Image (tube, rainbow, N blue to C red; front, side, top):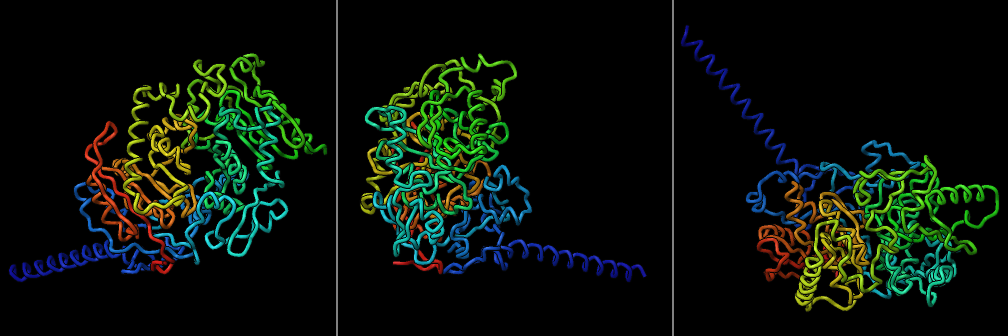
Length: 612
């Protein structure tokens, strides 16, 4: 009897073990098979098209938590799938479909729906964004200022909507830009001369002998204002949201004009305090009086001492009761902010910001808006809420117009005073400038056999440090978006003090730009930095591909292990149009033993095949 019971229990135990093994095997198959399930990132040799509704993003990101020595030896995919053609203009963190899918409830009245809302990991697209049908290599600068290929941005509604304002004109296979705008139908160039005349600048030049260099143009349209500032050696950060005038910034970047997606909503713009000599708004349809004037106070934070706000709008000249009411309220608010009218003519008024704190200190107790508290960091700008307060000057910046900066171009290579705030000496700054000058010369020698005249216009430095890379490109007809990773964001003020432009960004997330908007991406130790934070190098490679134009270049300088890992993905990314890897010389900025990898992206169509 005992023997029989023993056999029974043994059989039962074996049954449980068998069922357990089957269950474990099933879970393992489900886990590893999920990468190849319908709606995930499955691909064959040619790459498969992915439906735009697919939220999955599992194949690469599941390796995030492995140590370097294991992660870097993982086998790379033979191909990366191609997204559905419906996603050819995807901006992952500005995708309003995502807001609906995640059932977010942004406050529309304060433009929260135009601010960044990034997808969680499981909803990211791990596929290559295809170009639209008929895409062509962009027209080269400077001809691109005035015309682009219609196939590259197949949207003509702005040409129809703004036909009387000369924003753009459809002409056969091209879209042309005559230089008009909502407020300057006769051309931005004449309008700019008019602003200089109002301020009585020498020679009617708005650059004022190089003292006006950095401009913030809010609600910029297709950035014709910024385009016509460039011949004056003025660089504008042309800013507009992805709103009802959809694709306006895409047109601007296709033209080769410095510009970016952004909105005056609830968050500070991602720029440090005292970055711009001029802020400009021409019929930008912004309610400056909302929320106790918080948007004007954001401009106040960004303007340098003595900076100007050029405002062209019906409130400045119309005499009907409604516009007069708005004008009077705006005038009262700006007076309490200690701004003064520098000039007023026709439909435009130009305000100037005070040079010192003296006016603030003379205000009656309780005057609104208040001064910001001493604990507020005016340079903190990544995902920081705007504040309805005035940023006072520090003792060092007191009474110095334009923050005491030299005129352009001298300021590009002179050590700014704000270096002290980030703990960098003038000697280290000058050494950084020399090193990057030498590095850039070697980069261009490395690309000499393939880079053609004017084939590179829009450049992004993904880890700008002190701006040495961009400064080294001064004599080339290019512009650089200097990106300060969040842990180096304090250094962005130096970028602006050099007369350059840039933004703060977290490279664990997608950048706020359209696909195919940059000709060259420079990534110095960017991959090492994000890997230290537990983010995926593979995710960043796919994001770089989204940003990069066909025929564009990536320059990746990083540790040997990182470069070896990235090399595995080059064929799958279709970045093997041209490839070069070298061991650079050691200098004071080297982070251990480095390699430089330069690759060129091929032009391919939405079916995954190369086009000629």
